Image (tube, rainbow, N blue to C red; front, side, top):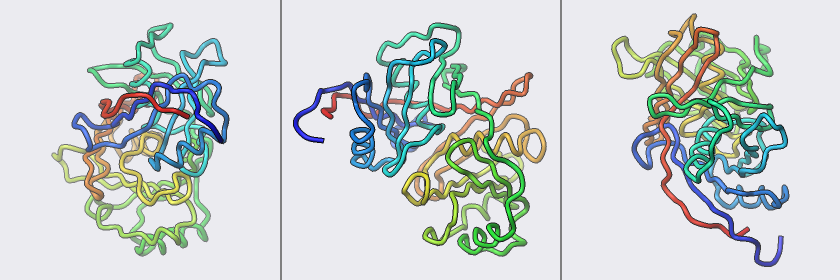
Length: 281
């Protein structure tokens, strides 16, 4: 990259929170057509957020816009909080969906979004990998998490793009007590455990992401909560529930999971813009 580029509209959106600075921020560049891969990756590296996104004209006529999603180190085919934050930014900038629902085009295909009770929610995309985790990998994961194999109630692939392995523990307290050795984690891991009955939230979730996002712990993670719901909702977990995430790192994320009558899992949360302006790339 060299020289002075074009100024484009820019927003930074806090996702999965109704209060500024307590969710997970995503950087959103509007009208990003014309930027190349190198420019997008360089800007994502510079923002140093878990994800930076770029809104482009759709290639699929069924979509309202196309989205590219970058971590500081790589591009992702899908991610949840960038999907909600980017939809918020597109709508706030005057975007009007062609149909009753918003349709996003991204690496995993078309993703539907809806707005109900003032919150945006996305339809969980299909898992691209599920099922048992090989025991050798399980042993490396539990060792990196600093727990015993017996502390794990269940473990499975729950990958909808970023590469998640899901791990279930006996309680939210056990989830919050984890102190991983991040450099030893062989894959990105999402951990879930229940809060006591009657609590505000049904479960506590943590996302350890030294591989996909290039950081240690993601504050609030839509893709992980979607895949955990596909794995556990209606069986171990209620069909619809509220999850807490970010508690261990000073955030207050709230993720609203709802299983529709047709079996579609919707993952939603509050969104608000904290920064708006223009960025020259």
